[in-house]
Image (cartoon, rainbow, N blue to C red; front, side, top):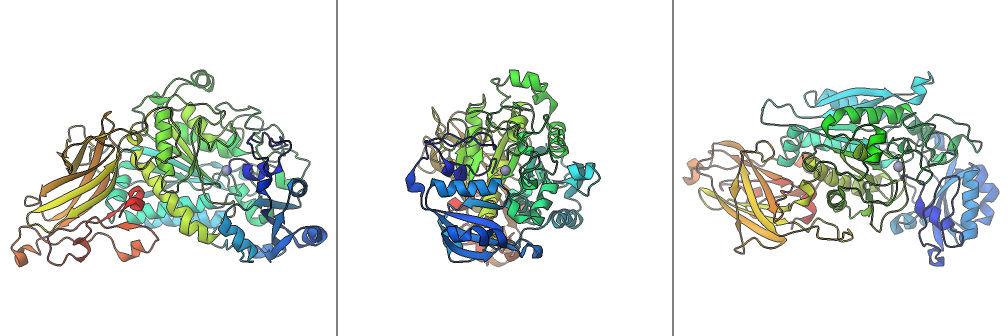
Length: 631
Ligand SMILES: [Zn+2]
């Protein structure tokens, strides 16, 4: 979480407003609500502390909890907290550094905690294991993965162990001059106690690489996007967490003399970025604070490495100038045709956040940022933490996304994934990672024009019916509204009627302005609603034997074209000798191994495709953002 659990902080309310502590501002939500209690806290502490204080707590469960073998002395307690006074007691003990605690809001987690089912955290790799995995991907997919060092951690700079800060760049080799590659940068692990983000982005990278050539969308994304992933921006902090799970360590390893203990040391790397750095609303000058911003913007090697890389990556002509110039131009819109996207992944709470965060202030590109966030939020039904939204939790000044958007004009978004910092492996693998995958695929599809593509309609389903000789009946459902979460608040319309839907055969619509594709027909006779079904009878008699790609894209009545969705169409001449057809049986492009990864696979054609037999053409799609809507 960008700030230590507001939900928790808000349990510690006094006089109806969240208290302001050394941790900086606590948001003024109206949560002075006795109905919050009883509330279950997950408390992690040593056995000694538990035996000293435990008799006065309402402990429902006690068990060991460990990330590594050496954590045997830790216990995890499920404690029922009955009122604010008890909650304040836990806050005091945490401030004293003897325990960590968090409110358990998720009902399933609370039940598991009370039933004594320990969280399984063995799926979380250490820093070194993660960086080794990066190198292994680079070795396995040598044409697709480049690994670079973008800086050193604070400990490494100071000769005290530490790590290089690594980035891996994923991109498919292509020699096609029509392909204009764009950049997407994904950062995880600013905050070390947030266990899920580094694992989730590593899983995403693996999914992309494994899916190349098997899934049409993943293939074109890698062919047209350079995806830059920083899996652990704060490796020192992550190492501290590995060694001291109970500290819930959040910041980097650079000590500034916090008198309340080592566990509260360090600089909050996500209060380090230069846009509106230094505000006391949204960051703190107190070294003990979880939101300690450090002595100067980008004073820490980790945040400096991330921002320097991002600033060099994205086009100069988009930038607003110096930090001072950018802050003066805070209400000046970034060009709508800007390319590239920046994503920062945190835990927890199931939010998408977007600029601005330094105050509840709409950015000049608000409509685009809100619409993109809303579509990123759709797969996980995340709340929206952005200006004017109900989910705006608290101010954050000096975070990465305000800076990459506000200074560099890169469309920038953040995620808060999962239900807690130490989400267990089951939650990571069954929920957190799959939801994030879908959101990141949507972001990747939009990276070529992130201020316009989310405004356009989405292709929800693709059906390819191959039962007719010499043609394929294409049917797609499109919508300008369906992927906008219904809790998005906007003073105006975020969706319009569909104006047209096109299919492009073997020509990607992003590649070349001259490509026009084939206009599909409205199934109901006219395109005049936000939701439409489009059809087309594709003459397949002219298609060469081999693999083809069908790309679909819809445009709304304002002229905004949405993201592309694609399926493979494999043609061979097998059937021609059997059924007298000019076309043959297609080969299904996706194997069982890939499906076993826990991904939703979508079959483009509902009836014939998976059992092609002597039918003519088959097509399958894995559908990323569209999968959950498939029927
Ligand atoms: Zn965070």
